[in-house]
Image (cartoon, rainbow, N blue to C red):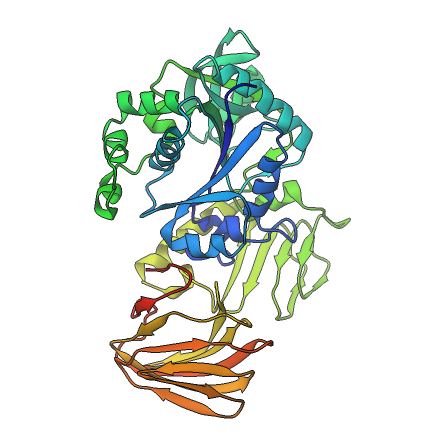
Length: 457
């Protein structure tokens, strides 16, 4: 291989079909659904296992970047989107970044939240796709279907092209059952994996041809948040792959799943003799073909069949497996209600540690804050609330206005509204603090940061 291969991992999705575990601030790719690693970490390991890969880039939204950085990836470049604009702008952003340093580079584009069982088969497929991409084709990986699946989009393969690929005749939306059975019988339809390989230069040329507003914005030396957010929110399939005459499909079979809903866990996780998947604190009597995902609380199930039960500290999902795709509609309803349960969990991870909401009501909120040894929060101020901190364990170093004081267990301090303040842990053990907030507005966006070691705005 002559040209350098860049692995580009798209990690900006929200994973709404995996609510209540997946939230806007902790989406599917950051969940540990299939192993002790997040799905993003599994994807990164898969990319780094390809010998030809020279560099790895993760494209994510600014809102999720801080959490991605907490995973402490080494030798990985994180590219932040000012706002989520679907896959075409995200891929264009990665391509334009790569071209600034390597005009001949080839990109391997992968979603961050998919499962691949046969990693050696995947590596071999990448080798084939690389050689095809060198000839200026846009390669999409088409999964040979094993069943008439209605949860995937399909690619219709046309005439053969040298190298074991087919010209793309057309892309199709998720079919109904009868249409999916017809596709399977015809044999030249493939599941759309969302995995691609192409020259960075070639994909930018096609964007200039079919979506010129995207490269026009990205070509500027400085792209403002407003300019990026004004770009069309469009997938790479709609923007380019359905229009270009350079798209080809590489038929592959390496045990792929997009893990698109709770019912998809059946394809990738081991089950007991009755077809059940149990995770966490679960007691069951006589259920079959049922998935129960529990947290710390005990979940007891009796005689369920073909069901999904997911428990988190602030929400519980119960639905038939056949309706698991409709979980996205629940999230839509929560969004309409402006409910926090679709945005964040009660416990929120931060670069400095975490906080857990213990209770909230009109004009007050109570949190438990944990600060890692040596870590510190930003120097900040709130316009609409005051805070009272009680140290439970460890030593707190508190900046309050012009003074800096150390507070020990069973001691407290008060932070008036509009006062500069910072909380840090100078000790060797985790710091635990109970925080009581009071004010007219207690939203997490009432933070004015003056200094932050994690470069948050």
